[in-house]
Length: 120
Image: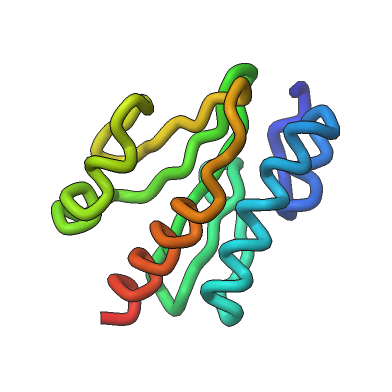
């Protein structure tokens, strides 16, 4: 991953192997399904989505995982605590290992929750 001046999410995705690109694209698709008006941006050199002036979510890929990030609210952390057990989770990031299928239904519910928070 030599290039670090990404201008679009497509450019970011293309820096990774096809299997990782598919995983990244599935998150992108979920965001567009849940928040069709969300704006695609590159922030901190990773893909992000904005609704209005608020950041809905960021995501990025690493050698062994994909990270979904945002400053998770206490309500978010409480709501998804049980489902996120066994994953590496911090106040702002959740790691999904490449060795396991992405929990797409869970990711969709998390994006829906964040979208609601951003709208409030």
